[in-house]
Length: 301
Image (cartoon, rainbow, N blue to C red; front, side, top):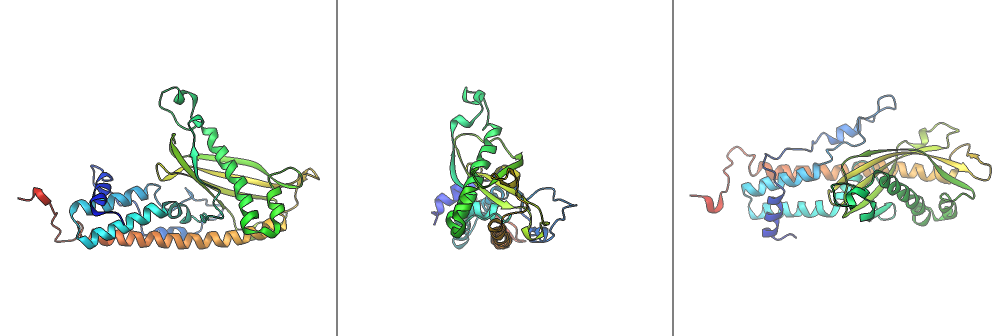
């Protein structure tokens, strides 16, 4: 539990000089319920404002600065504790990324000073080199396949681990697209998650390719620093050609992963809506009620 004095300082520091904007909409579930068709792709791969976490804190801060009763202060502290503990899962899980310990690809991985542009290292303003994000995605892809073999599908462990080698059935990155969200800098830590883009059951026969979305989360900013879209192909190195279709051990796991992604999306969106409702209750019980009178404390005459 956050002490009340510390809670007030934390909330006060998060308030901007302008009125706090309501960045999260309870229409989230409805937005995601309408699954886009391939002919009508979504404008962006997520359904909430990327700064919703910051804005949620600002909304709590406005309630605190207006004046809350002791039980309301405790409720605000509980919400802040939940946001601090689960912010990665709330952001990524609500989009369908699997965030549990056995599936996450990189967790709190250090951004090192040498990954920034050379001019930045010499003293001017700069950021992590753009190529580094591709390397993050590559390391995460390797860990993703190894995690499945080590923790999820031990019966086919050898085949999953061999996917990153060139001795049998392996993975080849056909293409990668990176959307940079803000210039990340040292020091920072990143967490990386992957998710399948398409339901493997709807993939036409004879296809050996699959697409992944990658989210690279910045701990310093508590939001995505970059998003990647990958297309991977399964390749038979012994025959020097693509496999005629996804190998059975991959296809079976992908079907399960897809189902878990859909469930994770629903579960974490539900938690976000619960937080939204709790914050909204604090607002309507403080500054946003008809007879609201601000608690001016010692400034009161």
